Image 1 (cartoon, rainbow, N blue to C red):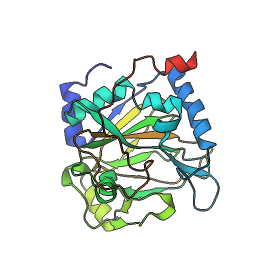
Image 2: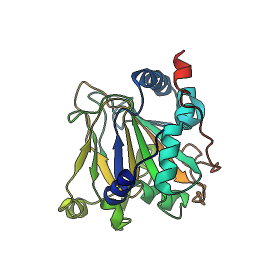
Image 3: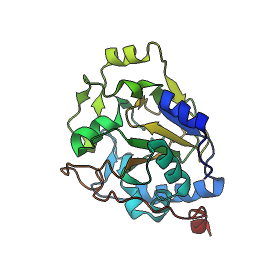
Image 4: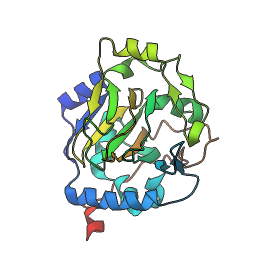
Length: 263
């Protein structure tokens, strides 16, 4: 991947996120969609369903067990960008999760920061970590796009967020409505939309959430959560599909690693 520009790095530092449209080709996306279908057919503790149905809400750890996502987790376009943004020579996958946000049944995500969980539950010392979102399907204004408060990462952790205590097989710290309103008062809220194959990279302290999906169109996103290798977890109470036990630097694969699966 071509290196990020000085302007892109500056914008990320200011806004806390970066959007890279159509980073992956239609053929590569087709490989990832096939992998996503396999993953959502799994059973096991890494699979979390919506509270009121058997609809899959999350599948953790696909970068460990499905070949398409094993390769995506070592793709040079993602790893090179992450190393630049984190100013490090090595990153590891702290966690990954597939969020299909099913048509008609995909539930909402309350406002939160990812680092709040990774710091409290897994002992990451610093927010030198990223949420890398790969769009497996088109994300539009209507099928529950991710919503971000630009620049909110610069305030650090929101200390009045409420710990949900592992409800539903996952853990977030919900940001109260008055706090969210104050954070967004001058910054606004930005919906992250774009074609399948696009990539959104967010600082781990960015405030984000999403509504439920009431449309006929699914909104599948794969989240690859990368951290600097010198910023490892130090608490290991959660399962490995929530918190990695391997923080050795990722060795990227070749550029055509996903295309090889299409052939």
